Amino acid sequence: MAEKTYAGSCQCDRVKFEATLDLDRTVTCNCSRCQRLGWVMAFTPQAKFALTAGEGATTEFLFNKERIRHRFCPVCGIETFAYAKSPDGADVVAVNVNCLEGVDPRALTSKHVDGKSI
Image 1 (cartoon, one colour):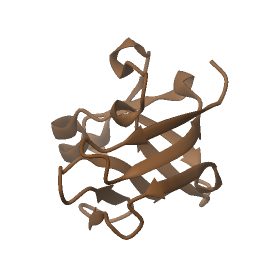
Image 2 (spheres, helix red, strand yellow):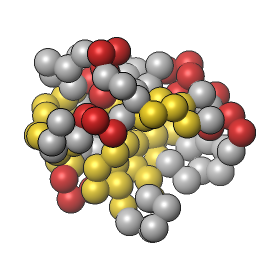
Image 3 (cartoon, rainbow, N blue to C red):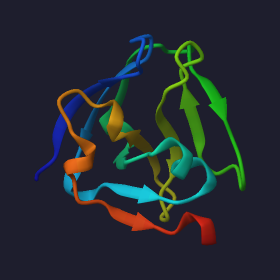
Image 4 (cartoon, one colour):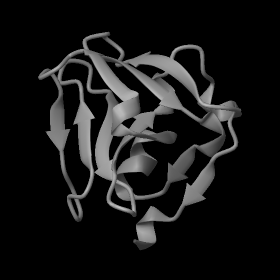
């Protein structure tokens, strides 16, 4: 699957975004947050992510080493994306694939990361 631009949103549509993603490179994680949320993530450079609604409306959650800025809608509680740094220091966005329109994240073959051990 090549890169494609997807639209996504939180449950109440207060937060909306567009992101160019390669869904052949999705990730799941078993850290204390991702496991509870059932996250399926796709990473993209920050330049390929656009918040189209909800600027200033999200709430931030930091935990553990506070490297990832988890952003969620304070109305419906859905975490649609998170800001982070890639291993090489580039600004990236982790997109919650569960929030993409027309995508079944359970049908994707994701790489599993052992976040519990990190």
